[in-house]
Picture (cartoon, rainbow, N blue to C red):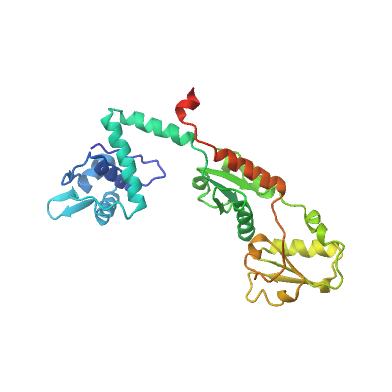
Length: 312
């Protein structure tokens, strides 16, 4: 079996060694009991650090792909690991079957790699990536977005060092303010979907004119929500003595809320309130943002078009 290593690759050299040995075993290129190159030989031939080769072999031994024979060397294990109990190993078996079938059809390895690359390039994204530096705001937005789309919604900070990797296979989404700060970090990714937020006065219209004798509570884990609500409700004529504010990050934050006529809150905080409370959920995402998310979601989830049909 021929090994190759890409030294300038996000996949570590140890992972490259482990993956190639497993694929070689699953495809039949490495037979049970076959002797493998020593760590010293790998280090010399492929410019690997001996510790890298040794760590890869130790991982393969732990997973029962290979066995060490004292004074003799490293050999493919006589019995393959049980693949049924591990999704990861089951996937490796699937990949191994692909390479074995390609070899039976006399398809060159370079052709297999080129075809796989083409398939990967035309695969649609499999998730939304919400890029937002404020953790609590990110939590609320991800919850609201996740309720209107079928694809998963994950989130990260705009300065997260994993951002380039997270962008792969994702539809990036953010609020307008964050979109301005992302700069070149999205230059090689899919277009950024900028989400518009709700109009606060319009959302509060059902509560106007302001009641004078009712206690209204405002609760959220996001300080921006509490600050915005205090300013807007005050400007709308709500008496200060009729407003009760609770930071849901604090202990006993629900104290006194049951006396309120209603609790104005975000979607994440609403999920933490007892059902007996009258919650008025203020959605941060506008209807236009929801429509955009649904359009992207429906487009991505449409039937897959094979590369051959795209070329034609």
